[in-house]
Image (cartoon, rainbow, N blue to C red):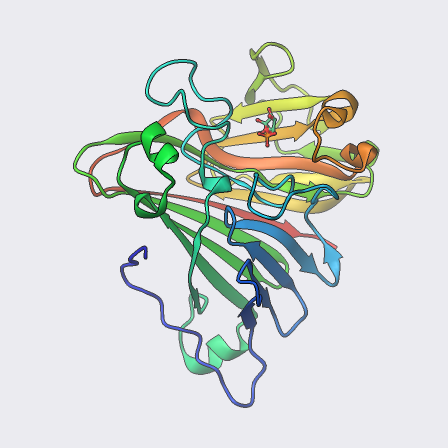
Length: 320
Ligand code: TA6
């Protein structure tokens, strides 16, 4: 059990005012939360992967029709969590045996608590149209192979906050050991779009990025808006904190992504060939209905001293 300092108060339930509804499914595989105004979120305990986020009955996230949800592999879609390494592990050294994108997205997390939003009084909590779900993962519940690959005492607390038009995800990393360690983290968010041909991404002009489609060449974005017309795999680094990245559809804002303490952002679309090469990516042309906008700390390594914590937040506003 991951201990949680200053555990938030449980949501007081008012007998008369509508309040958020939270439950675990009978098979104990996922946690479902909904708001009185109809928004909902579903989180698999496998990887603490958000697999559905709906506003006004509209699904905001892409999940492949062939996504494997039984815990045997990372979910192809939703919001897989990347920790302690982004991308393929180093080819040698202590991290070499970690899986691509680390072990967080393929580990079984604990559902720690549902907590009230910031306001904690009865009436405001009961009428607050938001609910926060906390999940935990620690070195004490890691697989032996994961511990061999990354032998550090750590704890993660992942909070998912559902509000009327937004979903906030926060990862807190704590070094529970007496030596420092380094990590990378990222929220690998698959946003659902109607037609990638109508999508443009604004807010990145002037930013530096590593283009993984061009042998990791270092580039600077000149266009004010990025259109997706082929395989796209860009790691933007050192972005202005809190500056919204906007996903436009047919010229209108559809999603606004803001970050706190996460200076990097990945834009990824596999396009035709890479999509065809993924056995769990379906239907084949589903690359037209998704764009990954991934907030993280992946440029270099975050060093955490004993007892210290790192907290990174990504907030997505759905504009319908
Ligand atoms: O975030 C983009 C990326 O690093 C791509 O290079 C691609 O590998 C993608 O993640 C998916 O990785 P996965 O391990 O989930 O197949």
